[in-house]
Length: 119
Image 1 (cartoon, rainbow, N blue to C red):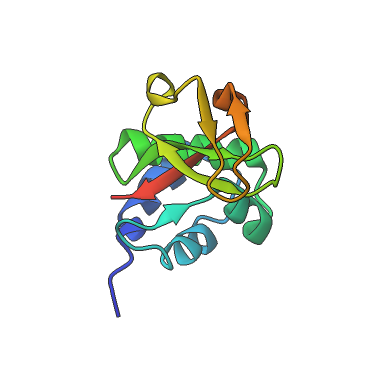
Image 2 (cartoon, rainbow, N blue to C red):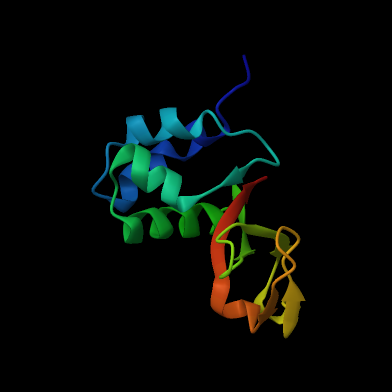
């Protein structure tokens, strides 16, 4: 059984006084391992934490180098992940094609979703 790397942040989360059950959050995050993608919507859906709070927590974890933020591009035509993930806004091209349906996405930044990778 792998150690829950997020257990180290429990004191930090308690210190920040987020309106969450820190132990439940840490237990849920224990399912994630290095290189796994963390979707804020999954945390929101499973733990019933306000989505803004989820992003605040993940932003804090990003600043402490437990996770790293990325932008995932979803297709406005087929509603699926296009297969493209970028580290920053400047990396996103002006146009790209969905790998699922070949739809040409103009201004993919409008279809970007902030996700995180466990470090």
